[in-house]
Structures are given as C-alpha cells and as structure tokens.
Length: 134
Image (cartoon, rainbow, N blue to C red; front, side, top):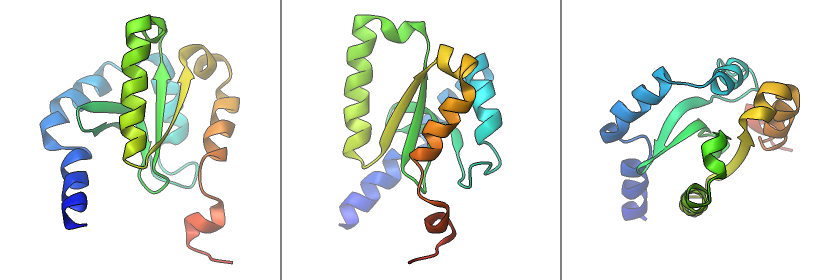
C-alpha cells in the first residue's frame, strides 16, 4: 500500500512536467478559456485545476476531490492516430481511478451551459461535497 501511495504521489502533477503545464496555460484555446471561466474559484462547489499532469499526460482540467478529468478536444483529435493515443491515455488515467469526460471545442463554444450541466452531473452531490452524510 505504501508503494502505491508513493507511485501516485510521483505520478500526479510531478515537478518534471511543470514547464509543459505552464506552456499549455500560455497557449490556451478560446474553448479552454471559456470553460475555465466557469470552473475556476470553486464555482461548481469543488476546486478544479487547469493543465494538471498525470504521469506524462497533461489534463485540461482536473478536480482531485471528485477524481474527474475534463478534456476539450480540437480538430486534431479526430485524426485516427490521435484517437488511438487518446484511448490509450484515457485507459491509463482510468487505471488510476480518475474518471474522464471529453467535449469538443464546438460544444464548449456553442453549448457551454449543457457542458457545465454534464460536468455537474459527474460531480458528487453538494451534501457529499460539504461532508454531510445521510
């Protein structure tokens, strides 16, 4: 058990990936900017971080308390080789107990409220977030 805890500590948001996370934050897309405006500052009742790394992968948005990763896919993700890479990456992230949901740029830009609703439906209930047990 101690080995597993140490492994996860070295896998999640490792310092060796800081340069990449910082670079991605500087080059954020309009869709990422819009969604971050709705996720930041605990607006959904949980804390999200943007450009969070898991091993050598950088997740667009991550909520540690809900173990939820959010990815926004641009057109590059439609290419067959990139879809295979995304599937492999998703499988690895899920192996760590992290749920991943994906949206495409179009949905974020044109249906932001539906995207937020879908994210909210994947978060724990407000009572669980506040620590109330029934």
